[in-house]
Length: 200
Image (cartoon, rainbow, N blue to C red; front, side, top):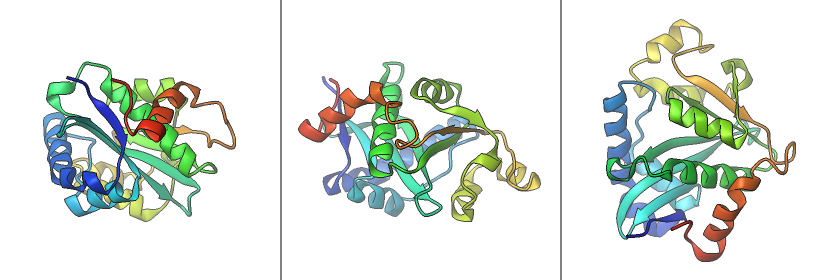
């Protein structure tokens, strides 16, 4: 059965709690690195079209959302998740590529960043043009870092004055700085815009 990758809209709000449950389960399994989000927050991202959701019929296969920071100087791709039954099939990379292109399309002047403890995510980020950086090169918006409070390693972050933690910071240039950086994501995203679904 095919999986579709969609730019989220209000019809996907019904999946918000399922997405939260998947994020929480992944955080528990890994023991670190994924901040909890509540259903209202995820629903807001879905309604605003600031998320990518992968579906097999009405089953959530994966998800990632975007958020602007520092008056859109930075944009983060966050909450990347693939449901257990859909892992190890290359879906995470497709979702991340679509979210990366969506972020650069909606925020062309913003640098794209993320923090992660996941080696597979780091490899995907690197393939998209991210580079590892110190936290000083990321947004300094306190609201972003407050989102880490639900991570079990938040004390590590605070002890180090939010300069380092177990996560690796990764940063990609803005679309204005590097217009062709996301060329490998264009086919996926163009499918999303024209057909409301991605690769099968």
